Length: 136
Image 1 (cartoon, rainbow, N blue to C red):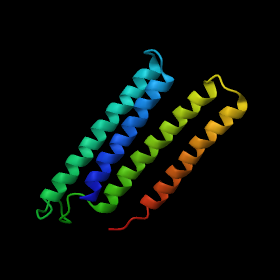
Image 2: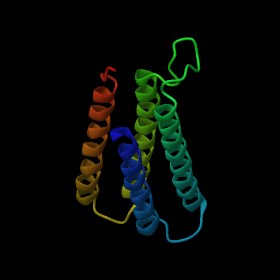
Image 3: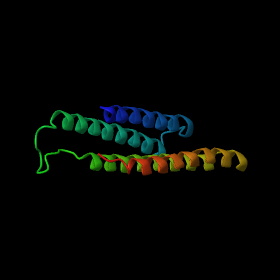
Image 4: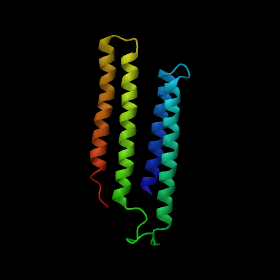
């Protein structure tokens, strides 16, 4: 049940971050606007599919769908979600870095703001290493 809420919360957080990027960094409808919108819809589709698969595997856990008797193994599930989340987080951090270094600020301000996003990348590496160590 916790993984269901995790997916919903993470999806809402990522979508709100992307919407902030749209509001702050994209004044007109250009390629970046459409890239960020496609990222929003990719997250929506991914997390709806994840939630549906989790509900389906919970509701049908007593039926055998393959030879091992499990529809979706926990370790495989964590590895897939972790990989997609890490890739998405890195992409969002890289997009933010591009916007920061293209902005009209002094070099000192750019370095300060860039450091904040590097700390975010540190968090991504930490969460991906912790997520890969989960065991069923």
